[in-house]
Image 1: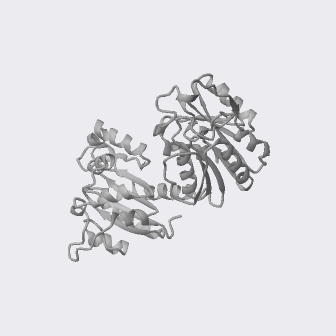
Image 2 (image 1 turned 90 degrees about the vertical axis):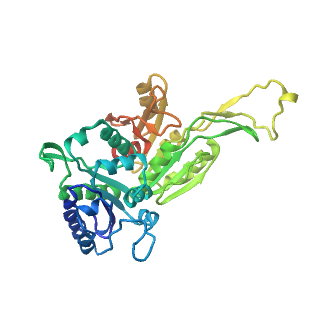
Image 3 (image 1 turned 180 degrees about the vertical axis):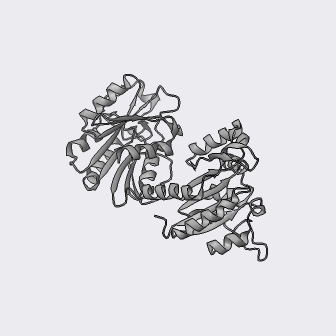
Length: 396
């Protein structure tokens, strides 16, 4: 899985840096192209000459090359890499990563990385157990960093406990497993809907909802990261298209989203209906702005919008999967099950407005995924990026 892959190996200043030499050799043996980025403190433990000899590349430590003044671009590194692994990741480096203190080349490269980031913590047991370290680790997990837990054993301090950097062989296994998973949707075509719909009252007013589109865009990005070709049908949002093979179709109303989904779905392997589609639209839309001074009180007559998920469920083939969402305020589980059955879905993702970490506009979500077979799984509150990975793992 690593043959031809571009890996950034970040090395920070800890005694476990000696293990990084072996990790570098294993990555190279597996066929990866490795660029080492080391902190100034890291060079006190292992020399750049050794690392350069094994990687076949000059080791990067400073923003500028001392002899030539050449600028080492952390942006270019971030775009080049298929993955970044920081091993050892000391308490200091983890704190800088969690808080965005970009005072060295390693942390600056981390902040520019577009690819998956792994970190293998290594420190004394008291440092690892300290509440500040725990907070930083929680922040990094929420940011999508995969932490390769340290092992228990004899430490450099002479104490015994948790804090030993995981062995290089195990770190490579974790990276290979992720690489394998990242190709799990290769060749698949996935339709994802995201964001709200706006139902116009007149040229300047509409009926809508508070959806930011963050969950749908996270799902589109996760599918693309796993090799899928994604068609993202998006309502009005202010989000950039995630990296990867994603074709965005911008729509405004539920009718426009319905038409786009009916057109695209027959060529898809699966569809994820994450958009917060308005259930109703004004029966009549004024061609000109309604003036309060001349119109006075108005009454809006609302008519039902087309049910996009039900329409796709009616034409779904046995080879296709259809995943819906249910945002509920009461009788959550029963309402989600009813929606799953009525709309011929294969899975439904339930989230509740009662949970302060779930719902519209937030960076986190807390979901339960229910399958038509009766299987279900609940996940704790996480960043929407991590929630997207959980949903894809369970459904696709």
